Amino acid sequence: METVTTERTFKNLINNKWEESSSNETLKSMNPSNKHEVVGYVQKSDKQDLDMAVEAAVQARKSWRKIGKVERSQYLYKAANILEGRLDEIAETMAREMGKTLPESKGETARGVAILRYYASEGMRKDGDMIPSTDKDALLYTKRVPVGVVGIITPWNFPVAIPIWKIAPALIYGNTVVFKPATEAAVTAAKVVECLAEAGLPAGVLNFVTGSGSVVGQNLIDHSKIQAITFTGSDTIGKVVARSASERGIKFQLEMGGKNPVIVTKDADLNVAVEAVISGAFRSTGQKCTATSRVIVEEGIYNQFVEKLIQKTEEIKVGNALGEDVWMGPCAHEQQFNTVKEYLEIGREEGATLLAGGEVLTDGEYSNGFFVTPTIFGDVDADMRIAKEEIFGPVIALFKATDLEDAITQANDTECGLSASIFTTNIGSFLEFVDEIEAGLVRINAESAGVELQAPFGGMKATSTGSREQGEAAKEFYTEIKTVFVKG
Image (cartoon, rainbow, N blue to C red; front, side, top):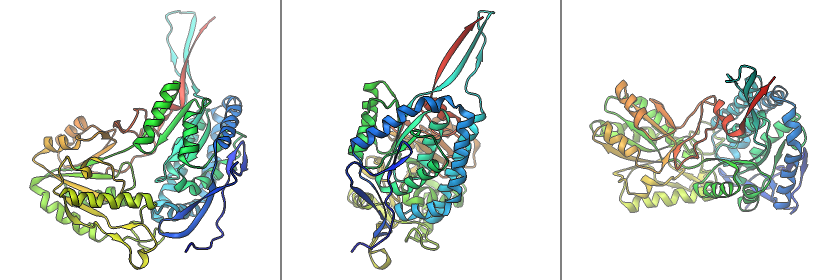
């Protein structure tokens, strides 16, 4: 039976007003550690709500552009301070809403603060270049100008960091925004938007609309007044975004699936490699696009590595995301829980050897949540589904390699190309890996899941459209270059 709560109902933010949806209906967000607990309610919006949000962004775009980067930066600094003041509250909401452990939730929220401050500092950096002209009496230069109205669609697995690393650069470079978060993490996203609104953003600059992907998301993707769209999520929806944006000739940015490999060479420090693989594969219950999914180990040290890996995996404490000393929380929601369960069964049916985990936890404290144990499969063949398809859960597939060349060949045997790691003490091995691996994020002696906010982030192959998020590279998507020739 559902727990009685006094949790808030969050409204849409449209033209600086908190509005109920036109449908007068709401959607509830549940705690995956306790599926009877309501975390909060958000609006079940329809096309009318989205149209109002887009129109508000259209009306605000000229005045927002004209106030300049320096003044725009002050809003981001204020928002960072407000978010920092609410860090513990928002982190707790995240832990309750999507099952990320409290320490991880605090770390993500702190990262959101840092991203806001990073892009606020962009207000004092150059936005163009002087270019020598062949005409000695002329001035030739470029300036970066905003794209216009940007649609932002974010997933549930990073409900603070991903919205901020899209919203902050969009705003600092002079765009206005319509933001639609994943419903499963919309309460956390609403609290992030509250921080930005409290910073005093002018009316219409940031608009926030919640609702289903099939209604709000699809209409945002197809809206004729949206001039760019950035999306992080599934391959299926990413293809819809690409098709619609291409037909209308607008900018689009996609970050989608990963099937990220880690290579462990015969000269690696195995203790370092094991700790990093555990963290990369099982933190956030494996629900990261950069999570370690495939581990390819040179055969000479395979048995030794696997023994250490199993031992460490079996020490992991699974439980309520707010629980003390809990290392791994639940799957974020029932649909993802069912997906992970399905892949656990697929792995068994395909003939992989279950070396650790593989259990669905249903007894005692686990009976009300979506808990699985961290899982390791050995004897995995490249043509198995667990070797090719993104599970987005705490599941490792192990492979043997005869040498580094074989390991890299296996690592590249995927349609995705987001992140990849190698563990080695040989400089030649890591240089060969850097040159040959087909991934946008390459890490040496470090877990596959991780990127610094000031560095470009994005993948190769089917993972990405090629443009990069975060760092200075973000301006390539959120601005266009205007070339100016001045004759005296």
